Image (cartoon, rainbow, N blue to C red):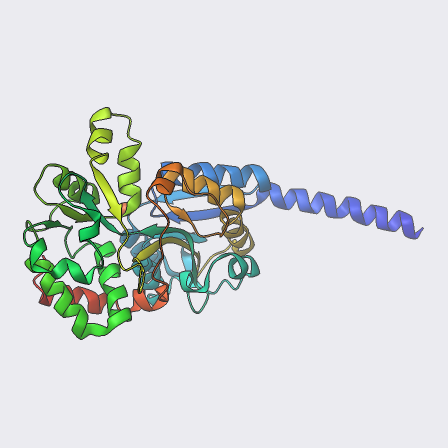
Length: 339
Ligand code: FE
C-alpha cells in the first residue's frame, strides 16, 4: 500500500513538475545586444525548458522603463554592462537581493554588490594601447606617468560622458582619493592629442592613423578588431599593442558586465536559475570566446586573442564603491576640463 501511494506521489510530482516547466518563463531586459546574449539564453531554455523573453535596449532606457513600470514591470532579470549602471539600477530601486551560494562561490567578492543586488558575469579590462612602431613599452609604466611631459599631444581617449571612463576615474578616486585624482585628470587632459570624440575603436584607429601614440580602451574592442571579417580592420588592429599599467602597485582598471534580479520579478526562481546558468563553465566559456571578455569564474579559459594580450594584475577595489563614486568622478573630470 505504502509503495503504491509513493509511486502515485512520484507520478503526481512528475506531472506537476513538467506542467510547471512547460509554462515557466523568464523576462530579461538586456542592455547587451541580442547577438551577444541570445545564444546563451537559448541554451538555458534547452537545458531547463524555461522560455526566455528578451527585451533589448540602452541601459539607461531600460532602467528608466523599469522605474516607470514599477510593480507592474514584467522584467525578471536586468543584464547590463558597466558597474556604474548596475549601481544606478540598485540606487533607483529596480533590483532586489539575490543571496545565492552559486554566486558567492564563483564570483570574487569585489566583483559583486556588497548587498548582493548584482553580480558580475564577465570582466572587462581598460589598459593602455600603443602604436607598436612609435612607442617602446619600456617607456610606459603607470596611469600616473601618462601625465608626464613626454606624452604631450600623444594621448587619445573618449569623452567624460562615457561611463567606462567615469568608472575608471571613480576607481582612481577609490584608490588614491579625489585630490590626487583631480591632479592626474588635469595632467592627462593636458596631454590629449585632440578633443575627445568617438568610441573606443575610434581611439585605436586614431593611434594607427598617427593622430596620437597612445589610447585607453577596453580590450574586447581591440580583440574584436583583430578578429574582424574585413582585412583592413585586422591590419589596423595589428599595429597596436596592449600595455598593462600599474602592475607593480594597484593593478589595471577593470569593469564588468553584470546581472540583477528585478525588484518586481514575478518569476524569481526562474530568474535565479538563469543567473546560476550564466555562471556555469559552459556559459562562461561562451562569453569569453564570443565577446572577448574575461570570464569571472576562475579556471575558465580566455579567448586566444585575449591570451595573446597577456595576463595582468587587476585593481581589486570593490566595484560597489566604484559605482557609488560615479557622480563624483564625472564632476572631477569636468573640473579637469575633460570634454
Ligand atoms: Fe563597450
